[in-house]
Length: 160
Image 1 (cartoon, rainbow, N blue to C red):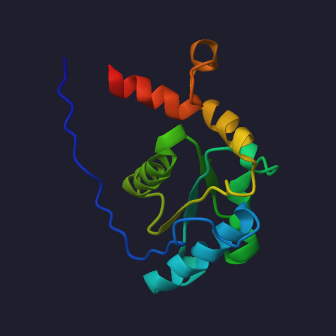
Image 2 (image 1 turned 90 degrees about the horizontal axis):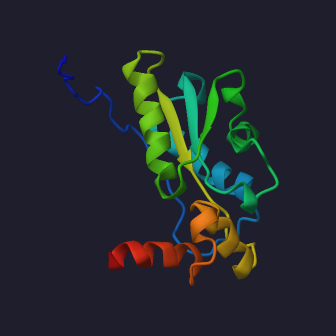
C-alpha cells in the first residue's frame, strides 16, 4: 500500500470581515452576504476583479426561499460575474467545508484569490420552524423524535 503524504496547501487569509454575533437588522441572507463580501475584499487590499472564485457556506435552504444562495454575492459584488461561485453545506461544518473548498481550489492552482463567505439568517424564522430546519441535518428516520430536536441529538452524543 502506498503511503499518502499529507501536507497543507500554501494559502493564507489576506482579508476578512464579519458581522457582530446575535440578532441583526439585515432582513435576509442576501443582505448579510453583501455586508461582509465587499468588506472582506477591501480588507484584503485587492480589487474584486482579482477574485478568482467564491465559496459560500449556507446550511439551511429552509431559512431562505433562494435555492442557489452562492449567486446572491453577485448583487453586492457584480465584478464576480462569470467567476465560479459554489455553495457548500455540511450541517455544523458548513463554514469549514467552504474554507476547505477554497483551499482545494488554491492548491490545484486554479486561482490566486478565493472569497469565502458563510451566513445564515435564522432570526426571521419562528422558533419551532428553526428547530425543524436544524433537525434536517440529522438522520430523521431515527432521530426526528428526539426530545430537544437537533440540540437533543448532540446531548445524546455528549452522554455517550
